[in-house]
Image (cartoon, rainbow, N blue to C red; front, side, top):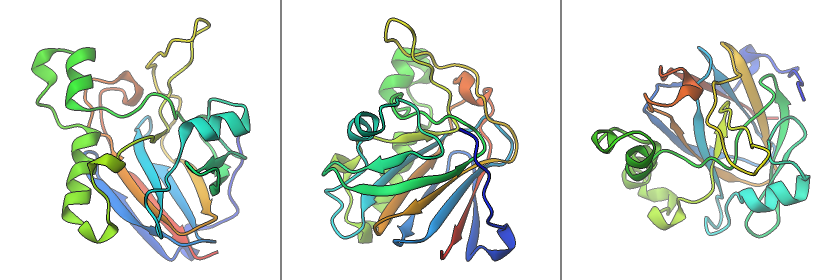
Length: 213
């Protein structure tokens, strides 16, 4: 479902561009709204969410899919935690589909999907690991790298239950907005993957903007 936001960027408390291949880690307080904008189109923003007070509680793809009865995320979706609590609401979305089952790229998956020679290429898991290593204050370690959302990424489910990593359906300026229901840690890898058709083999920046209410 396409739902545009009434918020204006001039009223955002903060704005930040995350380059392709870079990471973001920070806290979104309850009641605050985060907008992720696909600046050039067809990028994938691989994102995890944790309860900031207890990171052992984190976004759960399986609980979210079961509760909303839909494998895709979009406006109206409620992101559910591993303890069954609502974490964030998707309050606006101009893309129309976001993947939560395809997972993130890693050296292992790059090897399986592309070629042994791709094993050394930078991956989203590398970006997450660097983020938590450089920011120990968030209390995360590699055991916390679990379910993620691929904002703007197009992963259709086939009739026989398989996954297709297809061309992206996003475009320059498309965005998704989420309002936090609890204080959450946002851990994002702006995907560096050069081999994925979802981003047109051309990783590009995204912009983050935050409103207090």
